[in-house]
Image (cartoon, helix red, strand yellow):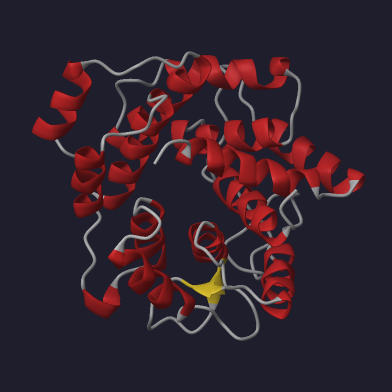
Length: 271
């Protein structure tokens, strides 16, 4: 399963390439406007935050801004290696993207002895390992990480289903079942629901579901479904130039800006 993190970045870049010049400029301006003198980007609370800085960094890379715009964010994130587990995982991904290297035996051992305790950290850890392995993560470790992303019956969230599918090799028996469950989360008017019992779609669920399903063969999106999902994604663009989870809020954040670029990328035809 080589290249998962790179695939995420390339899909977001495809979404950025499809933006018209003015919306692209507006998004770049909104992202750079969140920077603090110390290098981090502001969370919705207004304080610099590694997690939101990480997504701003991903967005700016997808938008192909000059390195001078991303380097302050990189320095800030590299200094967060010992923060919370999620922030540390983000820092690790940045480090590996800037200087890829093969993980040592100690890296594998540390993951096995101290496995991630939540789905999101498990997925970020897998991305970090994937980013560091030229020949891909060993199948045994792939299975280990997939098992950390527990699915509890029909109540599993859409992002959890998508993460499990993204980490499941194409052709695996589980992939078809996961794909079917994900497609059931799609709203007829566009977008994907976050869980089975939520009536309205949100941008995170839409982006990750479309990304995971796009890797399947065949992806299974009709032109009408893609047009509806594209319209939903564009409706989440907020007055401040960023993106929000749904079309209602007036303010967005860097995390959902990346999900928007990812979703837009899946709505564009492959080059």
